[in-house]
Length: 237
Ligand code: ADP
Ligand code: 5GP
Image (cartoon, rainbow, N blue to C red; front, top):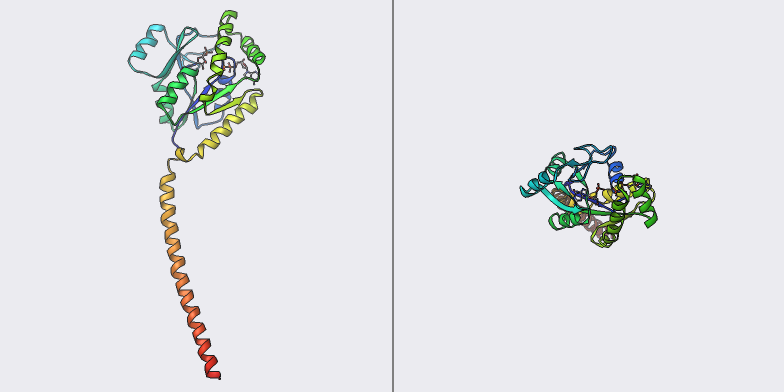
């Protein structure tokens, strides 16, 4: 199958990063696209693993030299997908999983019609707030800004291909896996299909010819047999 981009979006705290990481465990057909950002590193985050942490100048200069597939501003910080990440993942024959907010998803939709866009919904506003606060990564002012932004982000769900509900994490991950499985059978994603169909058609035509020639031999024989039996009827008379 042709490698493609799997874009996961959700309001902050919706669970997309958790789902992406769980989904990738034990699967060698997917690669995680490590984004670049100017936001400060959270405790436990590792440079090059969770994000490529860049200064604003570094980000802008890489953006100006065309290194980003897409980029956007979120909460006053810059975030973007490096083309080199996608090249690396595609060259390994894997699909690239991207954790991207809605502006970036729109850029991807416009430039990569083959991309699969999936929106992760929280089960309720209270669950969203609880998860975001419980993550303890943003101070209350930033939590508030992120929740305010969530209302706009939710309005963009109709631009996505799929929306899944992240109530139970295990169920949500298996839903994403089921979507990927179904997408792998989409005709446009099966790059070896045209070749297979061409060969199958040639073989079907040959099979039809063989049946045709066999049936004409059979029908010739049976008509000869019936002629013989008719003439023997006459001689018996
Ligand atoms: P996002 O990447 O969308 O901002 P995270 O993946 O960081 O969200 O999830 C936010 C918090 O919610 C994390 O602490 C995560 O462990 C928790 N979480 C995610 N999904 C669920 C779930 N289904 N049930 C309970 N907690 C969840
Ligand atoms: P966070 O600071 O919580 O890690 O991420 C904030 C927002 O930035 C999330 O909505 C996340 O999806 C988004 N984001 C992370 N990486 C990228 C990226 O490469 N491009 C874009 N456009 N958004 C990103």
